[in-house]
Amino acid sequence: MRDLVAGIVALGLFLFALGLISTLRYHHRARERERRALRAAGRRVLAEIPTADGLDLFVADDASFYWKDRPIARPTVRLVRILINGVPLATHAAPGHGPVDAGDVDPAALDRPEGIAHDRWDVVIGTDAGEVLVECGSVRERVSQELARAVFDAVKADMERREASPEDTAAPGDSAR
Image 1 (cartoon, rainbow, N blue to C red):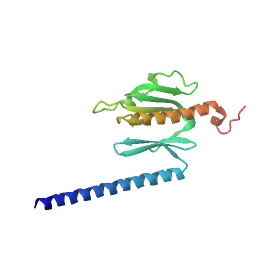
Image 2 (cartoon, rainbow, N blue to C red):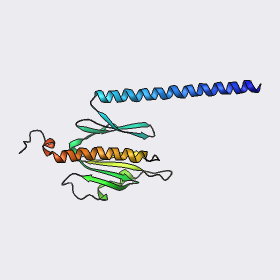
Image 3 (cartoon, rainbow, N blue to C red):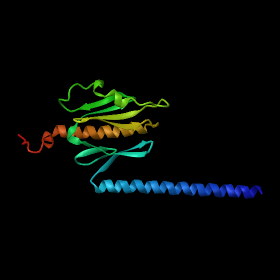
Image 4 (tube, helix red, strand yellow):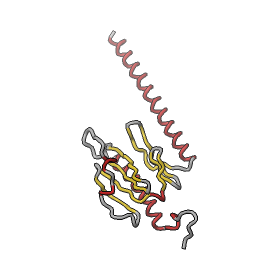
């Protein structure tokens, strides 16, 4: 009798494991389809950021960055700042943007309740239209830090490239002198 119960429990665990494997394969294939669609649209994934709902992607194409479904036009980016627990850690601002201090960050955008005390990593992208907060999370073991750093570095590199060649940022109809 005991062997029969153990066999039934083992069979149940085996079926449960098969269910987990098929679920993981389904989600993996869905992510791959999404990545292929992005590549077909000329976009590339810069960071996969875990959220409560799954993964949000920070992607870019030649004209814009995209956070969730919000486009961030590259020529309008004036400031990028990496934050740890709401405190600026590193900042890069476009020439003429003004002083680079913590006062540039909208404190209301950073006021989020946290359960357990974790280091929360975020990136603020300041544009002509306002600020975009890219929430990189508070996953331990440096995961969130690496994600925030990847987003910050990509935006900063684009800003530096545009600063080095200002004729690329001229408005249509403007002539380079």
